[in-house]
Image 1 (cartoon, rainbow, N blue to C red):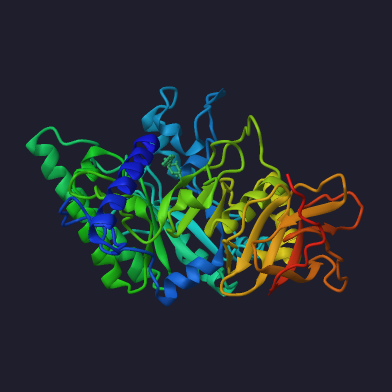
Image 2 (cartoon, helix red, strand yellow; image 1 turned 120 degrees about the vertical axis):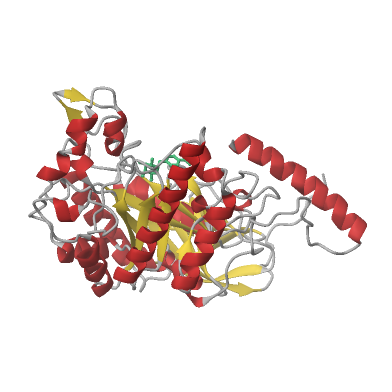
Length: 479
Ligand code: JFZ
């Protein structure tokens, strides 16, 4: 898919190059396919709500539901897929899964403690599963019987979470899956007239639930849609388009990523003219772009799991588990490419977090307290990527941050600036009172000596840049 899309981009670039030559000076690429339900905007949103989202940079994802009860193990057998998908495993009797809600009683769930912990980690927004593919609703929806209200816990989870996070200064977003294994009207594809009729009913149900969520939780900033890859959804681009417009009309400013949308030809995320639909590119999942060209100037968000692919709580975390330094590096990389980064957590059935996740939050938080300045409100610096790590820059300023993930054995960071820039001052966020002494090597290239010690977390060097030409100490040699 990606390869195809890249091929598409290449073709589109060639075409647009041709067109711009023909248009003599006009650099606006023309759409080749007439679409009613494609992208409705070219370029990023410029309003205050989107600007706010863009500056948050770091979010917390929460995957929580009845799948936390088996936690990836049924009858002593370990499911090696993602824990929240266990219902689809042949070893898991559907009937047993569909009765798990009778045991869902997260008595130790403390929304204020969750929010405090997220705040201490440095998260500025959170995305919580209101309903995953199993159809279980964490809010007492009046459109379904399969909700938190039917559990021994009885109480709404979403409302208190949104309120607690908002109180801690964290914006709330709602994850909502279009796949619903609990609703008899949900279909993956439409083969008969009966299927079509069922899906029509299902879409009314989806619309009702979304309206209900916005009415119940009016402070939410957006929806994070998922499960939109089936034919039944992507072959009705008109509905996804109308739904998006309907929700944004109900709740002006609402932020919705590209995953909700398809166009009338079934193209997802990007329409058939290769234009991004929705408010930001929502396809970066457990992978991040490598370079700025990969994001084509779009707002984007990457979502990441701590193990390789577990979103909901799994009792056994197998394989590689990401360390806080790896996560910090991913966050810095995302910001250096002008994107947001969202780290996932899967709370246990009682409403507490596993110790590995708690430790991770604490470690990331300690780093963010010192170095958050390089993350929040920062983005692509416009400079060449260099070996020691990632440049970020506060939009519109000449203050750039070097997030140093690879400390060289020489104890000196080799930094190359674009022509016309010189270093005015340099210091680290861990010791802002101590000026570093950059040494000019050759025009626009410096060595910045840093304290010789063992670094256990990435170091952030702040550079204040001035305009000017660095003196060239090297004579040009004839070659
Ligand atoms: C989906 C879900 O199936 C999963 O359980 C989790 O909620 C995750 C956030 O979203 O999984 C996906 C969706 C899209 C891709 C991969 C996994 N993708 O685009 O590569």
